[in-house]
Image (cartoon, rainbow, N blue to C red; front, top):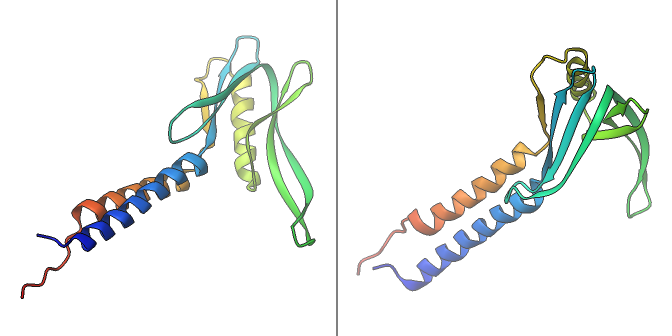
Length: 169
């Protein structure tokens, strides 16, 4: 029979890891899914679904119709930290332009220009070839998902399956 402090300690650490995993999945793994579909009038229609990764609860769903072009915006900005230091940063935003000339942001801002160009090229290809299959762009964080599920699994392993050495007197 195991001693009570050992069981309680394992349950405490297992529960802490389990709670950490749930917190990572719920608050660190949110994202958005963009579904774009071509129309016969050489435009595209995209639906952006903002969601939480843990519960897969849809937060907001927005549809953009009559997209005529996808392009990449290079944004240069200055970020001020709490201590007063300023830092120049650059990031890339994928925009789609409708027939009326209105621009909408697709997905999340990134730091890789090649990735942003690839998304814009996919949208432009979809517009030029109306018979192609729809595209789906997933902007959730795969790393955070792995970290969250890993912490949950480790918590279960620690609390249920770890054996401790028993001493017999």
